[in-house]
Each structure stands twice: as C-alpha cells, then as structure tokens.
Image 1: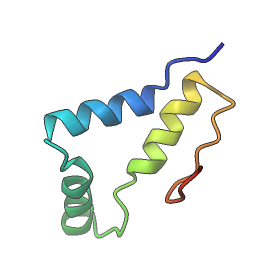
Image 2 (image 1 turned 60 degrees about the vertical axis):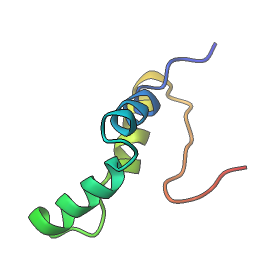
Image 3 (image 1 turned 45 degrees about the vertical axis):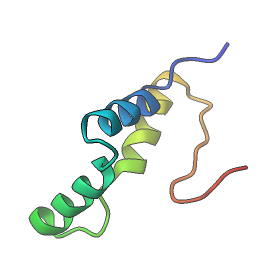
Image 4 (image 1 turned 90 degrees about the vertical axis):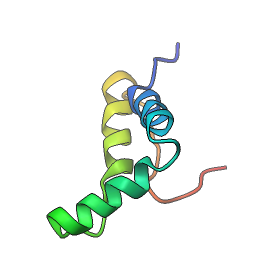
Length: 65
C-alpha cells in the first residue's frame, strides 16, 4: 500500500499559491537573507515524503526515469 507523500502535496500547494514561482522565491530569500546557495526545497520534500513513506527513495537534483 502506498502512503500519501506529504512533501509532494506541499510542493504542489506552494506552486499553486505562488503561481509556479515558489522555488524561485525561496532561492532568492535563501541567497539574500541567509547567504545560502540552496533553498532546501528538495531536501524538505524528501524529508516530508519519508515521514509517511519510509521506503521513498527520491534523489535531489537528479532526474529519475
């Protein structure tokens, strides 16, 4: 049985509210405010997906076919 992936749902919700610019806005904030080169979006998504599905094996910044 597959569980609901919270990270995927949250990512979709953010994309709807920000009209597709969620990752760009998060990256701008992380660079200007925190001085980091990554917004942490992929890591957040992986962490949330593993809460509900421990077997989730998504990889950040890599395309899986």
